[in-house]
Length: 401
Ligand SMILES: Cc1cc2nc3c(=O)[nH]c(=O)nc-3n(C[C@H](O)[C@H](O)[C@H](O)COP(=O)(O)OP(=O)(O)OC[C@H]3O[C@@H](n4cnc5c(N)ncnc54)[C@H](O)[C@@H]3O)c2cc1C
Image 1 (tube, helix red, strand yellow):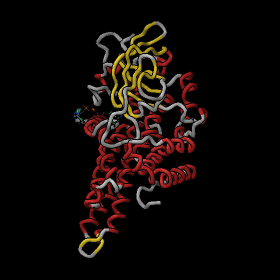
Image 2 (tube, helix red, strand yellow):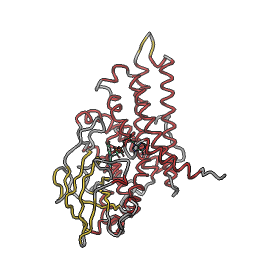
Image 3 (cartoon, rainbow, N blue to C red):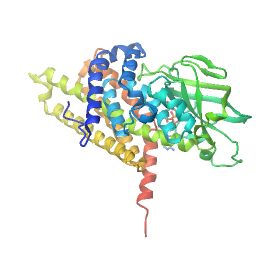
Image 4 (cartoon, rainbow, N blue to C red):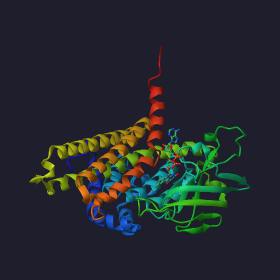
């Protein structure tokens, strides 16, 4: 166990889960991650291992076959997994968001249909808000679902679906004007549709095409895709929660827990970067001593470790707040913002400590250097987090004069 990023007050069950996951990461993920990442290869065996550990159902209630664990347990597991390879945490993240949205907002029939199979990892979730022309500005969504008898007909193009190819259930946010008169505020005229599909690429069901994997600078292994709906017919009982017009709020609820998750990923990647940096600094000699003995490098290590600690503490705080049933958008926004910025800085410092070797694909830090930037963008950019934080602060500290 590392001295950094400890979490006080965990139960025996939480400690046991975390120790099992850490062991799995050390034995099954870290040794193969860089090789698979360089080949952009999907980590099938790792995913099977995660299924066996029950991680796909970690937060799904026990009555649906999951482990019924808290957001904190989940986030700490994600931190461990991202320490091994961030892409693997991406594979479970969208699944977790969709399962969470079903648990919070689904009808009884939707929960009964999907959650037990999601807990086993048989049904795999992805969520889709972004489009080619928008990501931050969700209210500008143009994809549309129009009622036709007992069905909805969906048209539009979606962008940046993590697990777009491997998933079999996609929560798709569309505009739906049914029952919402012209001029209704954009966030009140959106609906989340639960779209079942085959895994794979091409036309995966009539009217639904997943064109192929987007070629990315990092975050490889996990598939990121577009999604094209052209007259896609969805039964009316696949509107999440059974009522149109609630999609924006449902998605924002999902993204809020997703932000804790991205913060946890930032913590995990930063921890790994620190481990690599502190180890290399004691092996590499310059001017007659290990570089760790040069004060400039020690200061770097001190700054890196402090950032790892601070990000972990904020992430844990945000998760605990949500688990206590309180609104956590402020804490989740702060944790996501800080953890992703610190992650990028800690990774860069570890890269610098490696000197020229950091630039070589033989060294793990090269992979981390390409992975960290994704955390600055996913689940809302830094600017969007600051908008959320700023608005909430003005609500809390309203001028009383
Ligand atoms: C690898 C990857 C995986 C992803 N996975 C998913 C997924 O599974 N599902 C999904 O729905 N989306 C996903 N996304 C999309 C992601 O959520 C968006 O990329 C992100 O929200 C930013 O949107 P954008 O790319 O359209 O940038 P834009 O919204 O165009 O923003 C461009 C720049 O302008 C800034 N900006 C925008 N508005 C403002 C403002 N009002 N004030 C100040 N600055 C502003 C932004 O911060 C950013 O710096 C993924 C993205 C990536 C890269």
